[in-house]
Length: 312
Image 1: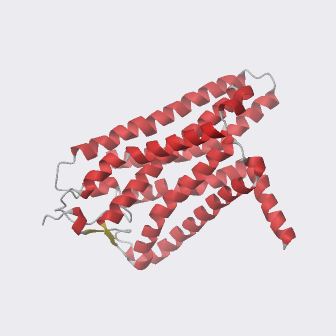
Image 2 (image 1 turned 60 degrees about the vertical axis):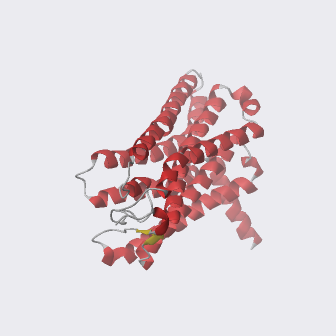
Image 3 (image 1 turned 90 degrees about the vertical axis):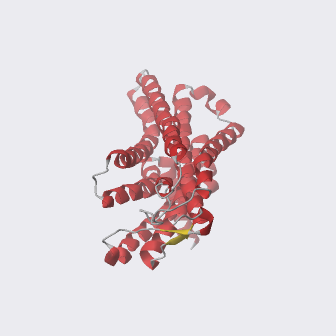
């Protein structure tokens, strides 16, 4: 039966064949959820309260933490509703909105990682002009540009979802709404919706990654020209956290893309697992990476706990 998107709901899917263990799986997701909220929330609070962290590098880190929080808050409550309460029905408007925010925030995260690479490039390759180039006004403009690119670029493929007729099963294959999932159910010409995301991936994910790669080639070239071994190590050490976050994000992006494009014979559980790794692993790991690898963040956290204990 044909139906317009505004008059029906979709059904979300947990882990097919593992319904009996959904409650136990939900405990794992809840633990990850709380960890992500705590880790990224702590980073944001620390950067806000500690004036020694009011520098471009940490402002961009705050943007990364806020993006990770947004991604987690957009997806995990729905997943927990499916696994914990068997609340599988989702209205079309809520579904399309969720898909919009999931994909927008993915592009925003890529953009934030790009500007963080730019920050490290200026700090190492042009340190004397660092504060002149990355002024507060310029940081705000860069941040706004990253947000606009992410949120505006995803509008074109989302709008048609509201007008497509849906005559196939309304059963989605994930516990959240994914653009690729929804268009499979549409009984209309979805050529634009299939091709436009590929263009976006090339011009955002691929291009961002290439620019980051070029930035680090130039950074490495500059570092190797430094005479002092100690200074070389110090310069590279400021990049380690960012490199780890870039690898965590883009490895999961590439893994998910390969599974979706070439994994037709791969069990569905692998597709599901990769999608959850993509949405949960970077937000979980980013605050851990910066907490462990960045001395200022580590000292700030220790100072907060020490002050709290002294106060009590």
